Image (cartoon, rainbow, N blue to C red):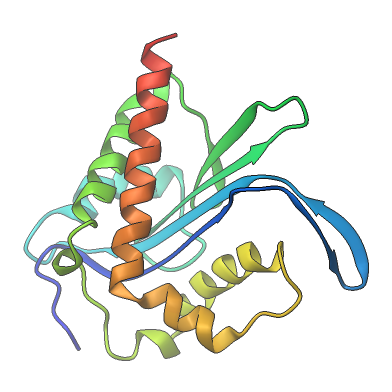
Length: 189
């Protein structure tokens, strides 16, 4: 077992961007895929070395994890609408999280967590993590993102992608940038 000195472990991710709309078929049915962006970052919190778990206790109580004990699953989904505008939604542990005055401190805390995860030494993976139920739950949320776009999902590749430290740091970087952009836009209104 790897020891996490930062209070973060067992992270998974996905980052999918469709830069152009396209038509495809899924289960033999044609459909249209709009421009879109999907980012998912899952991480288990603990207090080894830092107080990450304590810092998120209140949040975890309000938004209980559906992927594992003491886990934060942060999702961002952005779709381009027919009129050319974009609509972005955040979810924390499967619950929609609106960017509003009430949630500003939560967004700030999540942004700091994503910023921290940009350094791959900030988290570790337990050796048996890919075989445990928590990973299977996290993988399910990731596979569901890929399944929106294709019938042919190579589960082995998705598993490798989901726990690759380089991809995790990239997804955390993209999530951090998105939160920062949306907070700047929110304050400029």
